[in-house]
Each structure stands twice: as structure tokens, then as C-alpha cells.
Figure 1 (cartoon, rainbow, N blue to C red):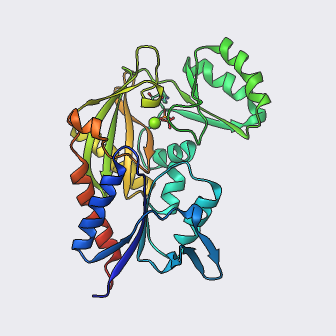
Figure 2: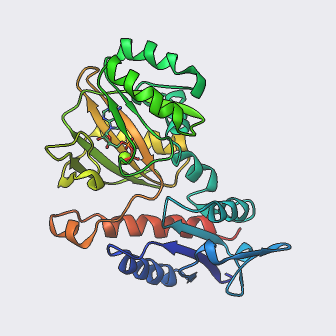
Length: 301
Ligand SMILES: Nc1ncnc2c1ncn2[C@@H]1O[C@H](COP(=O)(O)OP(=O)(O)O)[C@@H](O)[C@H]1O
Ligand SMILES: [Mg+2]
């Protein structure tokens, strides 16, 4: 069989460099060469090619993009172009979908996956928010392209919405995206899925002074078992979004008594060396599933 070659861009902090080395050596055992550290920021498109340090990326058998969710317009523009001619993990479409909270919730709902109730309206229709908060009691304003809990604003009552609206109106927003504030125990589940298979589950707990579980908002990671229901929800969410690799954030809605998907992360982190010490030992399983996936997707017919 002809030699296969893939391009890879994987984060190098928090133990990512070691993960990359393992993936590269396991791919090598299968006769797959890897061009590492291919950051599209440094690529140039010319005629039919996308060139990175002399390599025609469009001639690779696959591109594995696993670095920043937050990419510049240039990087995502090339990501999209490249994926028109070679397979990518995750596909550009699924990557772009998971980068947007409204699109994700919309797709999940249409696939029968429970999300937080939400509403999206035009910036001039702020009165719509007044209507919905009457029904919901509390809500969360979310930037649709945010991460790490940044910019999320909990709106506790109509009076605080009245205070907030003038500020939102001053900002150059195109629309408002709000979710019903879900009553939950301030912990969540992160369920990792690769190629439709369950990889791992862990939990995050918000700090005493915050309602967000994000580590960047002071939350802490803890060991937590999955159950059949959670795994089913996570698999269904990944399938609906079309991601080969996904980390699904789930909380338990105490009113509905159901699991609710908050978001699907298209670049869910491997366990860091510190997290491995507290018992999160899923990295090898995840690496093996990713290697299998790349192997299968690059098999020449
Ligand atoms: N509708 C909601 N009700 C209650 N808490 C929420 C809701 N949405 C988000 N949160 C809390 O805020 C955190 C961050 O929200 P999320 O939608 O995952 O955005 P981010 O991309 O910033 O992580 C969640 O982990 C959860 O703790
Ligand atoms: Mg999140």
C-alpha cells in the first residue's frame, strides 16, 4: 500500500506535546507518516495549493486539527478550504457548528437531544427578552461564540434585565441569545466521545462563589462515573453535530429531572499531568481510538 501521510496541529501545553508524540509513533506503526505542528496561520494558498513550509497540504491524506478552538478568521478560512479537498478531523462543518452555541442547541433540539431552553432574537427585539424572563424567572445571557464561561451573565429578575438591556444595546451585537437558567447542583459532567465510542467521564464543580463550572471560572475537576443515560446522550449529541471527536458538557436539571446538554466541545482536552495524578487515566484509550479513526479514514480504496 502506498505511504499515507497526514498533517497535524495539536496543542503543546498541558502535556499536549507528549500526547502528540504518542499519536505520531502509533500512526507510524501503521505506516502513516505525520507532519507535525502545521499551523494554518503560517500557510499560504496559491493557485490549487495550500502550502505550509513547502508541503502541499491539499495532497495530504488527512488533516488532524486539535489546537485552539479560538482560531483567527484566516485559519478557519483555510480550514474550510482544505476540508473541501481532503478529510479533516473534526470536519470543518462540525467544528464550525460546535463553535456556535445557538447553532449547536438548534441542531441538538432537532435531533431530539435535550438542551437548556433558549431564545434568540434580533438586537432590536429586546422586548422579547422581557416576555421570556417572566416565564423563566432566571436566565443566562451568552455570547454564542464564547468559551471558558467568559461573558456569561446571569439575569436574576426583570429588574436586572431592565438594567442590563441599555448596556447590551450599546454594544455592537447583532442578536441576543439567552437560555433559561437551569436549577442544578453546580456540578457538570464532561463526557468524551471518539468515533461514536465512549472514552471518559469526569466532573467539574463550580467554586463556592460562582455558578459556572468552568475551570477558568474557578471550577475544579473531580472523578465522576458515567452511567448509561449520560453516555447515550453524549453519543447522540456528537452524532447530531457530526463530530468525530467531541467532549459533551452535561448538567442534571433538577426541575425536569433530566440530563441537559450545555455544549459540545470539538477539541476536548486530554487529561493534564495533574489530572492524571487524581486518576483521570483516559488518555491512552483516547489516543488509540483517534489512531484507529485516522487509520480508517485514510485507507486507500
Ligand atoms: N442555562 C444554564 N443554566 C445554568 N447554568 C448554566 C447554563 N448555561 C451554562 N451554565 C453554567 O455556565 C458554564 C459555562 O457555560 P457554557 O455554555 O458551557 O459556556 P462556555 O463555552 O463558556 O463553557 C457551564 O459549565 C455551567 O456551569
Ligand atoms: Mg462549557
